[in-house]
Image 1 (cartoon, rainbow over the protein chains, first blue to last red):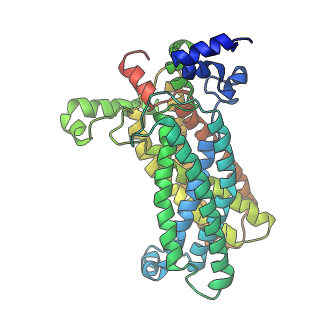
Image 2: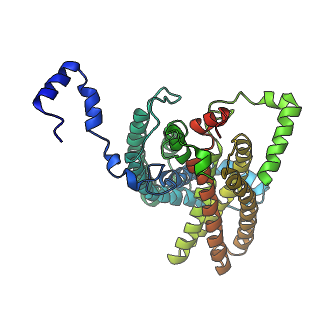
Image 3: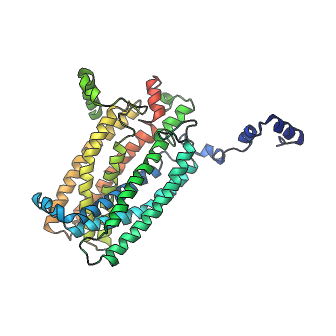
Length: 225
Length: 184
């Protein structure tokens, strides 16, 4: 290619259109493999990350809830006896420990697939989320927040393990109040973080076949019949 | 069919008694009376707890840790409670989703299987409660078989729900806009 000969480059600087030209010359790396991707910009039909997220959020949230239930066990005891629902405090704390352990394990895969699918994301341009964010800032916050939450979850799991096997081994209440406080705080953060991810789909149309086809101006009724 | 019946009921209610439609806030650009879809959020707790219970059962058998059976039972209990909440929101949001083309059939399968899964989960949790009363340290071989069936139904249901969102884009801004413009 000899687009950039000397005379031409001189001229375009004068025209101040260098920015536009670079947009044409430097293409997104996705375009190299675009023929291998489906209309949803993925090599498969259904994105993986949103499915793994069910496991991360579900296991972590219910783990924290069961530890809260275990911590307030003396208050619940009468209600549980009234309902004839025989459960033990140890049982509640077992759920708290094993669920958060499983959540931490699976979240590595959640983050990994999230990054893979974000590299291939083609959000609808010139859309703003409810918070007024553009697609790229939503994506970056979701990415950095995801890694941060993974780090926090691993730390919480290690802390939880130490409480179970070392610090509070001989205690009925297996978790400290500060663990419950931080757990609840992380759940609120996760809710906000998850909303960013949800908007990437519902507002920015990332990896949604119908949205991508509609934006390209194709007739969905023909394709989906 | 289930879905269209409920859709019809919602249609009658909203059109015959204007008081019902005035109870809901106005619909937004995702055709929802609230900011985001709630059904996929509630469904976290059904999917994670049901699949988690199956995995904890298997791990409990392989590593001979009977206390994992208790974890599994409590997770199943949460899944059973959560699925009824998921159905309530799923039914409202399905009624507002304006399905088009093939997605109508998928939504019908998803609704039918969803209601069935509520029954299946309730029976399984009840059975588990009874067998746990007898001996919480032992899990019958029959239950492991049931676990696999449960996991298969949950995965099928997740796949159907995924198709509604990730292929047909129900309740996403561009699809709702296209429906309102009469393109779909």
